[in-house]
Image 1 (spheres, one colour):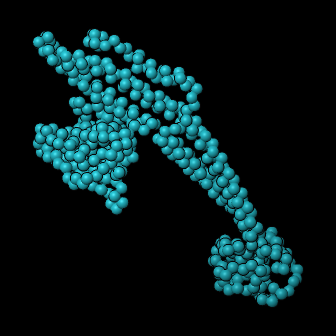
Image 2: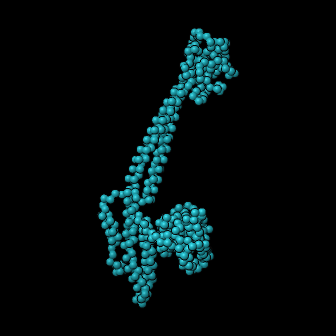
Image 3: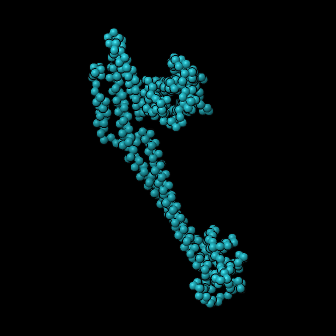
Length: 461
C-alpha cells in the first residue's frame, strides 16, 4: 500500500530501456570485445591445444614405438636364423682354426637346422663371430663388429648402427649336454633407422599441420561458443545498470516520504513508529545496494568512467581516517595513519574515496574491541612509479582457502563474515573494480585470529 501510495511506478519499466536498446540493434553481431572474455578465450584455446597436443604426442610415440618394435623384431628373427646356422660351424672351428679359410661341403646332421658353409652364411650387412666356452674369440667373418664382449646367455644388444644377437652353443647329445661356446651375429640397422627417420619426419610434419588446423578450428569454436555467453553477460550487465538506474527514482520518493513522516512524529500513530523506522532502514539499505550495483555496472562498462584528475592521496586518506575516528572510538579501536608523503595519483576522487572507505570500514567492522587498524602509504622502490597503500587490522582474519573468493559479489565465507546491518555484500567487489579502473592492483594476506592486510597499488602521476 505504501508503495502504491508514494509511487506510480511499475516493475516493467526496468525492462523498457533494455528492450529499446535491443530493438535498436536487433542483428548486431556478438564479438569477444571485453578483456575478460578475450582472456578466457585464449585460456580455453591454450587448454584445448595443450590437451590435443598431449594426445597427439602420445599417439606419435605409440606409433613410433610400435613400428620400431616390429622392425627390430624382424631384424632379430633374421639374426637368430643366422646364429642357428652359424652354430653348426663352431665344432669345426674349435678343432681347426684354419677351417674358416677353407670351403667344403658339410655333411647333414639331420637335426632340422641349416647346414651351410660359413662363407655362404651372412649377407653384406651382416657379420658372424665364434667364441669358445671362455668367450675367447675364435674367428669372425664380415665387416660390422661391436667392441664389447659377448654375453653369457641369449642376449640382444644395440650399439650405434649395429644390432647384435648372442646365443650359447651346446653339444647335440642331450645326455651329456655341455657348453661348447658362443656365436654372436651382427647386423646393420641403417635401413631400419632410415625407415624410422622417414616415419618420424612424416609424423612430425603431419603433427605440425594437425596442430595448426586444431588451433584454427579451436579458435573458431571457442569464439562461437563464448559469443552467446558474453552476449548474455552483457545483457545481464546492461539490465543491472538499467534496473539500478530505474530503481533510484522510486527509492528516492520512498525515502523522501519516510523522512517527511519522521519529521512530523505527531502525525504517526505510536504503534506505527517502529514500522516507519524499519521502512526507513530498509530504504537506506536498498538505496545503498542500488548505488553499489550502479557503480559496479558503470565501472565494468567498456567506456572509461574514471575522471582524470590529479588527487593528493595523502590528504584523501587523512580525511578518511579523521572521518572514521568516531566509529573507531565507539569500539575502542586504535585507528592510525603512518608515513604520509605528499604523493599524487590520477583518477576519480569519489571512486578513490569509496575504495579506501570500504577497506577502512571493513577493517573496523571485523576488528574486535581494543584492536588496531593502521593505514600506511609508501612509494614503491626502485622505480617509484607506483604507490602502496596498506590497510592492516588485527581482526578475525580470513581462511587461506577463502582468499581467492573475497572479491566475488555477495560472497560470504561463514557466519563470522555474515551479513551485517547496512552492508550490501558488494564492498570488496567495488574495491577491486575501482582499483582495476585506475590501472592498479589489490592483494590481500590474512591469518585467522591475527588479522588481515589489504595492499593497493596505484600508479603515481
